Length: 302
Image (cartoon, rainbow, N blue to C red; front, side, top):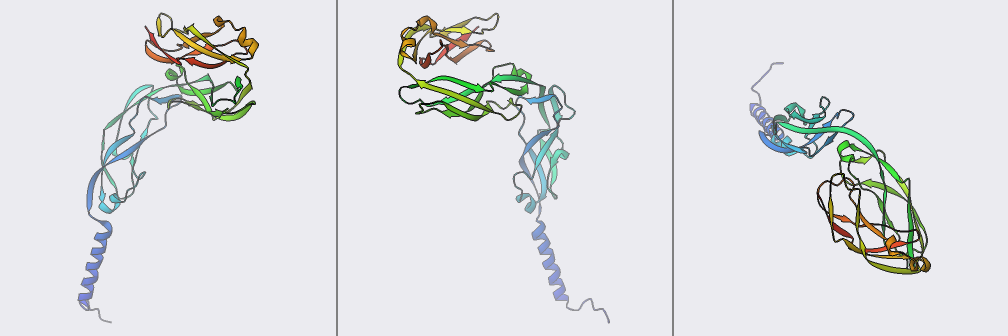
C-alpha cells in the first residue's frame, strides 16, 4: 500500500498544534521564585546538644515550571543540615543547594544566608524535685494538711549549663476545690523551657491530705530572710516584713509562737541583678498556710 504523507494534511497539522498546546498547558513556562523554607538539623554528635537560638528557615531561590512551583505545599521543600562532623561550641556550617530536598522538576538556584551558626554543648542529667500544681479551696471548715509526691524527683536531660540552674518541674493541675477528704491522683509531669526535657515520660502520684480546720490566725510583721545566697554576694529585700495567715486545730493555733513562722526567699543559683521572687515559708507541724501578703518581694543581689 502506497504511503501518502500529505493525505489529510490539514487534520495532521491540527493534531500537531493541539499536541503542542497541550504540552505547553501541562508544562507551563519556566519561572524563578524565592521561598521561605524550613531548616531541620540531623546527626547531632553524642553526647552533645543544640543550644541557643538556631535559624528555623532560610530563603531559597527555585526555578521550574509555573505549574509545579505554583502547586508547592508546605513540606515539599526542606533544608537538611547534617551536624555529624560538628564539635562542642559554635559551628559555622555552609548551606549548599544540594542540601535542599525538592520535588522533581524544581531546580535549586540559591540559598540565603549561605551559612548557619549552630552551638553545641555537652549533655548532662540531673534529678529535680516535682512541684505539685494544686488549685482550688477545700470545702468550708477543711484545709490541706499535707501534700506528698511519689516519686519525689524525676531525671532531667539537657545542656550542662542549663542544668546548673534551678528548673521548675510541675505536675498537671490537681483540683481540691470543695473537697472534704483526701485526694489521690496519678498525673503527668512537665518541664518549662525547650532546652531541658524529661529523660523519659513520667507520671507521679500526688496525695493531698485534707483535714478539718478548726482555727485560723493572722501573724503580722514577720521578717523575711533569704536562703542560699551565692558566696561573695549581698542581698537586699523590699519589703522586709510580711503578714502570714495560718490555720489548724484550735489548740495548735492557740499555742503557736509567732517566731516559729519563718518567711524567706530562695536565692539558689541567682546571679547579681534585680528580681521579684515568691515568698516561701517554713511552718511547724500541724500548721497550714492560708495566705502570705505580699506573695512576692523585690530582691537585689550584688
